Image (cartoon, rainbow, N blue to C red):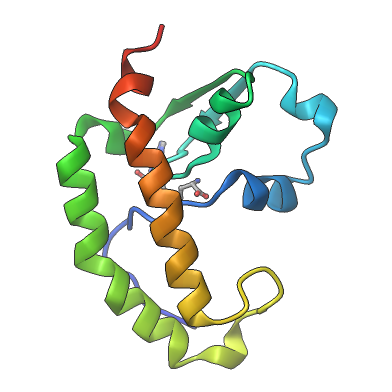
Amino acid sequence: MAIKLEHVVPFGRSLGEYQAMFDLTPCDLSKRILGVGDGPSSFNAEMTALGHFVLSIDPLYRFTRQEIKHQFDAVVDGIIAQVSSTPADWAWTYHKSFEDLKINRMAVLQTFLADYVQGKNQK
Ligand SMILES: C[S@@+](CC[C@H](N)C(=O)[O-])C[C@H]1O[C@@H](n2cnc3c(N)ncnc32)[C@H](O)[C@@H]1O
């Protein structure tokens, strides 16, 4: 196993990663989307900013903004350390290095958190 995680970790991907991961087309993005387990992904925030509709559900959303940030901060360096110690287990096509991976994950979290309170209040 490449890395070992003791708990579900609040790591999130960006809209660009979702597009690549799910092969989402512009037509797909124009639909009303239910994101199950979106966690601290910036998919919803980025899509909303573009005028699209995404409803995200995740047990993580019972926590406050500060609690989610704290959970991320508590695990990020340990996960990156595990990834950096097993470089051959990963494809470095999207993220160019483990430093790049950390920077991207932190940027995604920032985008998610900036939209979190407002997004939860949207009907
Ligand atoms: C590693 S994060 C990935 C988040 C997002 N899917 C992404 O790819 O960026 C996994 C998420 O799955 C959520 N999760 C775990 N069990 C779930 C469940 N039964 N229903 C919905 N979400 C769940 C966790 O709370 C966590 O936020």
